[in-house]
Length: 122
Image (tube, rainbow, N blue to C red; front, top):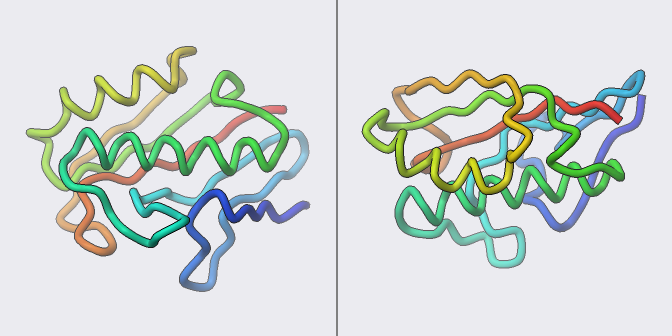
């Protein structure tokens, strides 16, 4: 097992890792839309989806792969009313259309609007 760590995605703020690589699979922790350089959270679902996607991409990059190797994502939205706007951004990154679950949750860390986790294969 290999722990994945990069400064291009927000650091873990609890007892977890940004990601793991094991037996040819890469598992990312859920990525909220925190800019790793500033710690800021952008305004609005489109900008937050963009940042979350970029954060997932940074962890994939740390594993030496890209979005095209993602086989499954789980997406969390604070408001299902943001589904269409979220999908618009998500579709630009996950062009291979991996399997996905997308659910609305009561709340997300730091009051963000979305979170994305991914499973990929090397």
